[in-house]
Image (cartoon, rainbow, N blue to C red; front, side):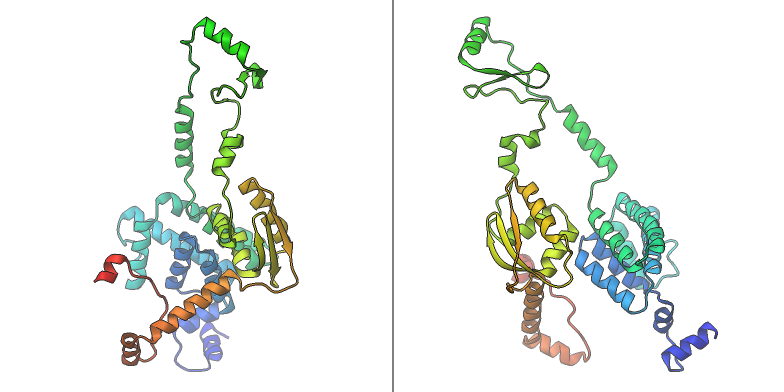
Length: 348
């Protein structure tokens, strides 16, 4: 059959639309691809994975979706380089506007990293035994990389750290005072023969010791987790997207105490989740954390709680007289998102 005959047979009707053709060929609409990229660049892993899974369930080929994303990144990068919509004249006006907005909001470094990641990911997906899983890993990699500093920024930061002067020892002390100090304080040989004073006198910082490993640095940097929400916030700070998704969607909290968490895991959770969570919390906080599994059901997952709250807010909005009137005036309209007003807007 020709492609047109296949489209007629698949659609079961005589008026074939562009949507029918895209569905038959497993292609995603450019506007939908741009929406997927927006979620990725915002670091919204859950939205990105959900959108991608919708493409796949509608007949989209994982490798083709990655190719479409790369093409969209090219359009945004070209628009940013030319400071115009040149080269995007074949796109609908709404899509051109989206491309221009993304070009203004994203840096060249972010776009080029995304392009390289998608090119590499295209080959990985093509060679993977499970293309869906490989494509989702490419999306998670992109989400994690979205706000990482560029190599240039890292080099600049390292140079600044290297140029920061280290407090030099006081050479103005008299010989007598030095002798008195030697007599009244214990001294030990530090790394490379460096002399470190005892507890009665604060010594200068040891340049051979990693400041992140000193007890003082650990006490200042180590967070104290008082709730399960604190645990989720700490995972978010470390941008561990996979672990955050596992906690939000598969972990029911049974009991929480500082240093110990008891969870009931739902079907679909990773096998190594418990040890992964325990090891990372221990490393991040400097305190030993035990994570235990329970057969008893716990609270709703954080993801379930969030969706229930969103549904509650949606129902409240729908019952508002103004919204009810708008819905009656526009039959078939749907509320797709709810955003809180800023203080200035709420006053108006």
